[in-house]
Length: 325
Image 1 (cartoon, one colour):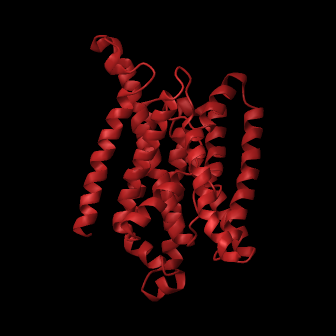
Image 2 (cartoon, helix red, strand yellow):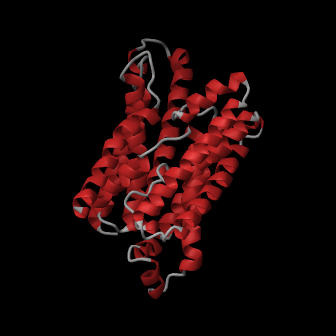
Image 3 (spheres, rainbow, N blue to C red):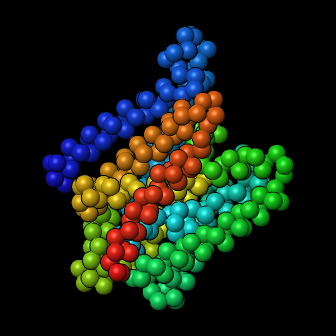
């Protein structure tokens, strides 16, 4: 890792700490301006710290997963939300929540998310491969969109048959909600996210080789038969844990890797840590905006990221249309 890249990582780490502090202190009832003693506002502080930590881990997971999927599939539009991975994870999490198991057995939430997300990934890759191969970007994107729509329909079916008092919480969760219910759930989901990101950083050389394509990577000594599935499983795992924490939040895995790849290059040894930090910063900023733009109303963070990511997605498509012409 070059000296400049180390400097940027340190700089982004400081930026993440500063953003977390601002996100914790800002809100409709701003802690610094409340004029109360510590015991009066400490519960509010704890909730905000929990929310800020959730935003950082979720943003980091989605950004890293998006970066890895874009590299493996060699598709600049690959992202957990667009490919339907997030929708697959949400089905498993919604079933656990609707059954009332998320409180008594919180470990089932990330487990259910990972199971259905992995099935969704295998289904999407299988269909895209049969429709002409993974090298054609349109095949993968269209397959992901269609599969995501089917999974979203299943999700609506789960909500339809849920109990009345769980429908509101499920609906708010699906819009993107960073207010984690407990530190226990955060730890259960954050631990696999951290381990998954560390594993992906360790496999940076494999990801760098995959930039040349699977065949060329195999020629460079990469065991693509086992390496690629393990990388996809790791990306799916951290996405599923992020969805279990916050619901469906789109485009975080699309915006952050693209911006950083143009700034620091495609070396995953530095790109992945910076994507994790950048994703965390991005989501904390979006959540802060959602809490402070229209007080006392709160805009779900998923709405903020969609309003930001939608135009960015169209921007990425624009050069492709010109190329065809």
